[in-house]
Image 1 (cartoon, helix red, strand yellow):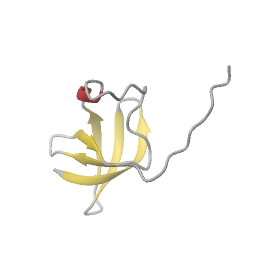
Image 2: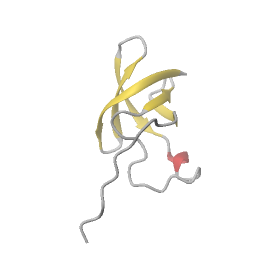
Image 3: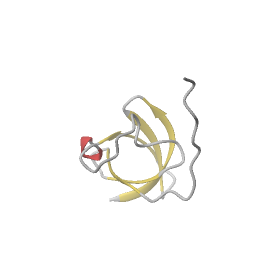
Image 4: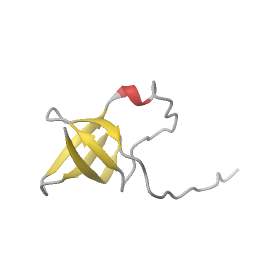
Length: 73
């Protein structure tokens, strides 16, 4: 497992900058729904994540801050 920083999210794919500076595209594993994360996109730009060699995001490291937007309705 390698730690990386999410720098772009498009649909189910996320562009990750690994700790060695390499860029890779990863997909989010479906087990985030089981862990209680109910948002439509559990991984967002700026998140630190743990990825494997197969190109899957296994865990999201704890966030230090976040931006919350109120719904328009």
